[in-house]
Amino acid sequence: MRAPLFLLIALAAVTAASVEGVAQQPPRDSLRVRDVPRGPIDPRPPTSPDDLRPGVGERFTEPPPTPPMPESLAGAIEPSGEAPLTLAAIEALACANNPTLAQARAQIQGELGKAVQAGLPPNPTARYVAEQIGVGGTAGEWQGLEVSQRIVTARKLELSRAKFLHLTRASEWRALEQEYQVLNDLRMHFWIALGQQQKVTILEDLLKNAEDRVLTARELYNAGQANRADLHDANVLLQTARLNLLLARNTLQQSWWELASLAGLRMRWTPLEGDLEGPVAPIDFEAALERLLAESPQVLAARAKLQADETKVKRETVEPVPDVVVTYGVGRNFEATDTTHNAGLQVELPVFDWNQGTIRQAEADVVRQRAEIDRIELTLQRQLARVYQQYLTAMQNVRSYQEVIVPESRLAYEVLLDAYEEDRVEWPQVLDSQANYFRLKSQYIDHLIAWRSNETLIAGYLLDGGLMPPTGPEPPGHISAVPKPR
Image (cartoon, rainbow, N blue to C red; front, side):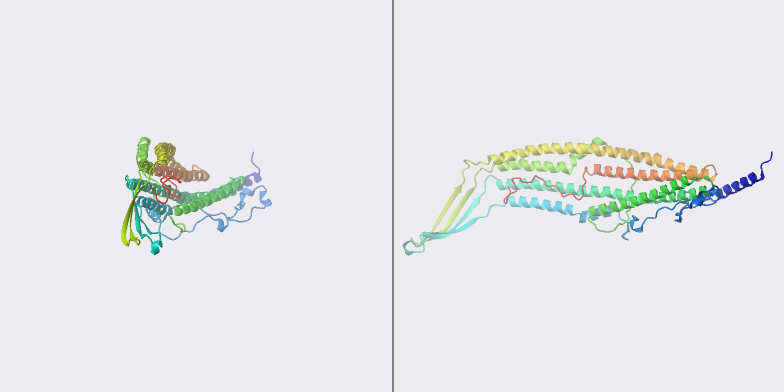
């Protein structure tokens, strides 16, 4: 039985519309990773209710517009126009401009000044003496000049200076600690900013992918192969991609200003130049721990402080040994009409105060400092365990993404692209594979940042905090905080 004439006409119309829709899909000979279809959405008003009538898929229908983003919130940061900065260049700027390094150097000079002051002998004293003025109608029985000098005994000055020289050495280790804090923090923020700079490029590609999805959804909708829900989903993906790109640009701006602050700079964003990837050479935990406990500036500063405390015990032990005060005077005896001299010798007797309380305090400081060294070593061991776990996990991820996940994802995309050129898969499936490839590349950068940052910490003795003030070699309120340190 023959089909009615009106059914044949309708079937011919649907077939023609389908062929037209397929013809409007992107050309197959130009769809590579670097040459994907691109184009913004045409921001025209949404479709009218009349477009919901049957047969709407037979002609092109615009989807609802995507909300535009104000230019003031675009999230882009303007470059300074300078040449790209490398890690070595930023490190040089930080060494010259970071204020905490100047503070650490000043702290060394302060401790050295204590050493100089503690070893200086006391100044002599002079006084004019007039006795019995007016006796017998004379100017006085005796008038003259007396000079006194304290002679420090028991090598007290030498021991005081030795103690502060040990503290100066501790300050030098603290300054090295501060330098590692600045450079480690700077390097970690450099890796973060460099990775964020690369993620912005990847998210720009993801945005183009989302734009292509919108165009593809329109063409499929026009061909009757998609519905309005597909158009709405494509719009959601597009705006999500836009927001992700804005977030990445905002994060890049934040990363740059944090990096510039560590380098002591106040300048607009300058592109960074460097290689986030590198040879993945595993660090042995036992070797890293041994190096950390033997060479850490924190441990070496604590040991120098212990030497100072031990010298302080010797110094406070000899404090009761009395100094000798010698006095000499010369003057005129007006009663005898003759020039005379006098001399004196003064010694303090340590009967009640023989410095017993201060000696006990100094001995307690030695015990405390020995325990402090143990505490620092155990704290470093604990910190290394935490950082090493993060380093090991990041390194394993980097290797997997570098050798398997990213290459396999790219191959999957290329296989689908070739299959699309051979008319064996649909274009939306290629776009899904391409977006997945870009997302995996973005995740790979996150793992690279984590690997580089934790590797920097392990190599730099776990020190960070480039804008924290340098620590002092001893707690405040110590017995050395006197006008004449000892």
